Length: 164
Image: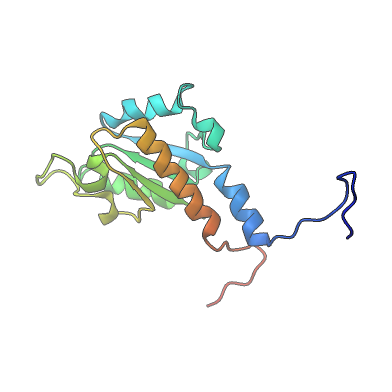
């Protein structure tokens, strides 16, 4: 199509995967699994001053069945591990997991028999946010990195045949 001088006309070329990735990265429905003190930092990031809404991540879901991003915030004990695994299994595909804070990443200061030494021993993790507690800027930076990862990954189409 020929470009007109008045700015009208023209066309945009893209792929379905690129468009789907763009849509998914700006419409993340989060399910916060908060167990410890990092929850205070999570609440500050979710409030108006830092505002996760501007990144398309503001919709907190109250059931894992409606969420596609699981934020594991805080310490996970071995008693809580099966619950976390069940929550992860209840989420629909595609789903992403964020380990939020030193305790979720590596067990933090709790190097003992009761605490899981990193949630990646239970469920797959896409992004790790270090810190005790992590600063809001670090959290936002990590979530933007997750968005970049979502944009770049290949996406399954519902109507596409899956390879066996």
